[in-house]
Amino acid sequence: MTRFFLLLPQIKIHNANAMSSPYTIGFPAMTAWLGAVHALQRQIQQAEFADVQLTSVAVSCHYHEVRTYKGNNDFSNSIIHFRSPLVFDEKYKDKNFGKNFKSKFDAPLTGEAFIEEARCHLEVSLLIEYQGLDSDYLDQFKQTVDSQLLRMKLAGGDVLSAKPAELLVVDEDNDQEIKQALRKLMLGHVLIERRDLMIASMKDGKDALEALLDHLKIMHRSTQDEDGNVTWTTGRKTAGWLVPIATGFQGISELGNAKNQRDTETQHRFAESVVTLGEFVMPYRINNLDDMLWQYHVDLEQNLYLCQTLSTSNTFGD
Image (cartoon, rainbow, N blue to C red; front, side, top):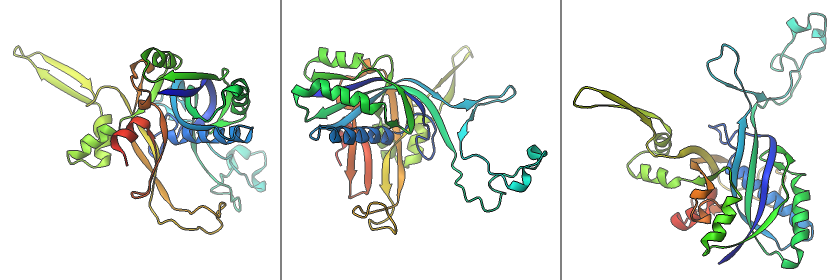
């Protein structure tokens, strides 16, 4: 089967949101990347390409740097938080300003929000599968994507630069064409879902948190041979660059209308983040494109609103 892809190569992003879940800081969550693709689709549809659908996306990370600081005598790095500036009362603006200032927690009647955020700089390439594009408008489509991309926010960060978009046609039965497409994501690591490891651990009687930590913890083991020599080994339960990732939300309240909600036609519900295992792999290790292509998936019976890979959808279903 022939598949059509839009490649957005080497996008440099400044100050992206590094809060990948309520518990982890690092690479932006897949909800952020799929949200960006959905926003790009809306912009494209408004620019004379109403029939184009961006159905799934693969993310290849070339460079990633979390904004951290480490002092001369510090043992570990500290996150550089981005937050609202301090608020000062008028009566503290004197020559002893540095000694007598008050933070927003002390200053009266400030009423400002106080939100700490971890940020990162990164460079990624996005491989987006699309449908509904007329072959007579390929050049115009690429120009529209290039212009819209530079105006967007990706994962909450500013797009500094990006190479021109490319359109790829891949026959999934042709290994050579698949390798050519994957080669364009090098050098980098693509994020795939490893929910299968979580499921296998939970079948052994562990809860979700235990299953997650079981594959993230580093174990130090020692063995002794017949001569009394001790050998130490260090590693995780499963080989690979495994990381916790946020892949969506689970509803924790009933659907209904909230007071003063902005969208009066869409029902509202409270939700909590869904965290599972992911793995960063080099693109040349990918044999099936569906292993790295992410899309939305909704399971109303379990109140789940997920981002998952196409191969996960085929394997685990609903």
